Image 1 (tube, rainbow, N blue to C red):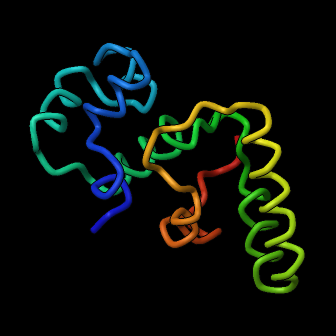
Image 2: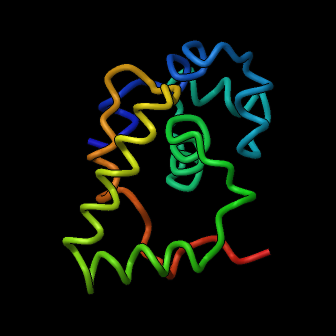
Length: 125
């Protein structure tokens, strides 16, 4: 079962964020009518699911993410796993202390298995 299937369906995520279909779907490059079909049960392609997760669940501004960010994460995980876990805990604690918006029922601990490898990162702009 995929992460978004376990957490919430796209319609529920959109409603919890208080967005209409056009606002929600255009942020990830999907038309309102295409998004409506996904909300009605049509299977969502993996790239669309990943964009939905990154933009609407993780609240990541994709214009700020670069390939090197994925390479650094991969390097830390492989070469310094203790440091990676420590930094991750610190970042999670900071995010929680700042009262970051979260989707109820979503636990970011499941994310690592869902992240694409560094070689699939979006090209640097």
